[in-house]
Image 1 (cartoon, one colour):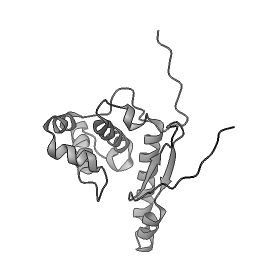
Image 2: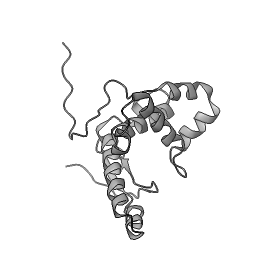
Image 3: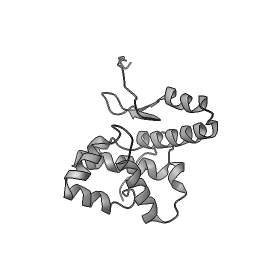
Length: 160
């Protein structure tokens, strides 16, 4: 039987986050309910529902893909790939039918994330020309990234 341990996880993100814990295999989606409820109290019920949908789709995508640390040898670029893919499948970005427009809107959203959101990505983008070129050239999720939120993810197919 697995041993459970309790720990506090800060969720200051406006919508939520996906936490994998120490074993990195069992993702948990944590919603920032005070932020979502505050909008409802301000009379933005429709916005609250849209935020909830976006947050759940976004964070479920993080849960169904590999941890960001495993996506690239440059951990911050792996973080960018993870955020990019989670936004790619989110309802708010599906309205873009042109791949380049969608990629630019996602990049701008990541680089303009409020507060400390995506801080290391924003720092590297401003201060590292090679990182900036990689971000600017990233136009769609990598082959093999899951663009479906089916859980559990399907087992890998055997190689021929």
